[in-house]
Amino acid sequence: GKISKAKNKREKKPMPVVLPDDGCCHFCYTKDSSRALGELREVDGIIGHHNCLLFSSGLCQAGKNEEGLWGFLIPDIKKELSRGKRLRCTYCKLPGALVGCHEARCPCTYHYTCGIEAGCLMQYYDNFRSFCT
Image 1 (cartoon, helix red, strand yellow):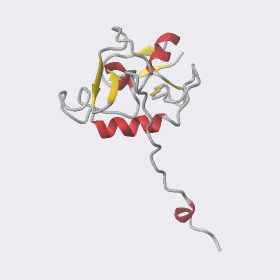
Image 2 (cartoon, helix red, strand yellow; image 1 turned 90 degrees about the vertical axis):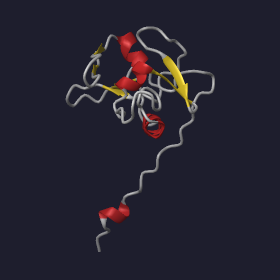
Image 3 (cartoon, one colour; image 1 turned 180 degrees about the vertical axis):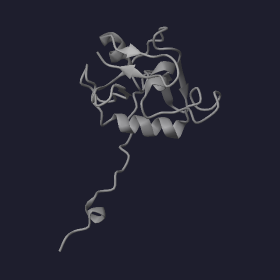
Image 4 (cartoon, helix red, strand yellow; image 1 turned 120 degrees about the horizontal axis):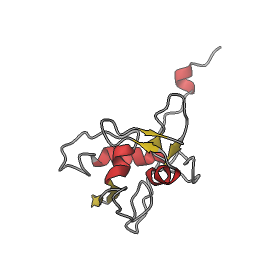
């Protein structure tokens, strides 16, 4: 007989998040706080640049600005960081590439910093979309 597809599928478990412990942003792995990256903040052990969070494809601001990091809630950030462990950067080839190209059918993902260095178009308004080069 046929095996039910539901029984055959493995339940996806979030990957454990291993965070750098040297004061680096958990999204781009740098300590830089340039204007392009925005302020670097730490809350509950999570460190991130404002723009790294704004451009992360799987994050939305579910809280008020004073909650979490600029309204991004800690459980949501941890889930996004876990998702990023499976995504390799188009430019540097390292994992954690949480910015996705918004062009239809484009599979490119990258770190915010790699996208900036590569000359990707970043839209700093509305839904904070990015388009690769």
